[in-house]
Length: 372
Image 1: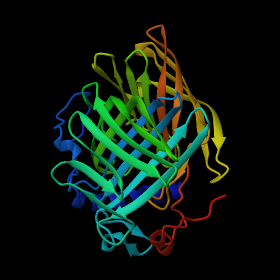
Image 2: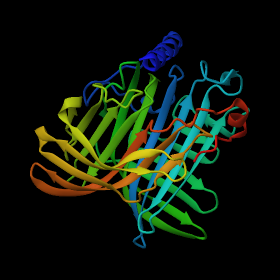
Image 3: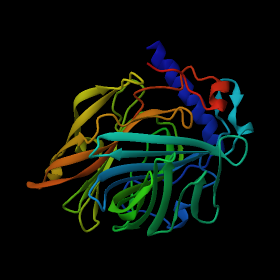
């Protein structure tokens, strides 16, 4: 009880100071809403935190299959500290980016993360005030209401240059959580093509991507997120928010989008997600759920999700101070009694707090605490 009260009081104090500075974004409770494109894709100076998030399932011309995640973050640091150190004196806003690559056939996972600013910290970074164009070093995302271009790399080993075109209307997701306000929308099916370079060789590839965009003020640190693209042309997005003690919150929500782009909002009680087992990282010692049964009884949806590679954990303490699992998964099951298959990305956040023990000097030097 004492620990729970301390967590609650500390969170309330931070929330009240943040609300005094940042203007809340409009929250959406339906699939359709007032989303102004391309304006809502560009950065919002009055948002505490915002991100542009992509996942994709692809196949190269030679037949190799892979998935990738690319996400850009932009955060106002007015109230952020590492110990006694106010970050606003070093970077405001601060940028970060994560790029992860899953080689499905070789069962290999690799990733890289970056921190940046327009000043002293990390990679030289910038975002246009007038259009959607964000860069952290030579990684970039830009575009308009229908077409996006992405570029990212991992050292000299891997580079992706991708073009994404939206095949369905944008979907407005439900509010993020009770403590804060954000605007969150998704392009649930984007036709993807481009060039992948591995070592000295290059190939064209094609696939399907998902894009999430969110901006506003929020304080949620624990969630499980599922983006599911089915081969019958439908998509399913589910969020399970948890408190600091692992208990699900009733602000959890979802959307089901049929093949024609019609969207149905799902409240917390409308779906069930059951983990089949757990997996423990040998690098960080973090234990995550692994393999899921997903059920939406009202839509006769029964799905089984399995990671295509077990270890898809990212330790991004040097950029966003988060250890999380973000992985490509294979999907089998049925919708309305008809068999289907598909692909999914699953994100698991809040199972490890790597920021504990992080010192100001280690943060500025891009180091992180030693894990197991």
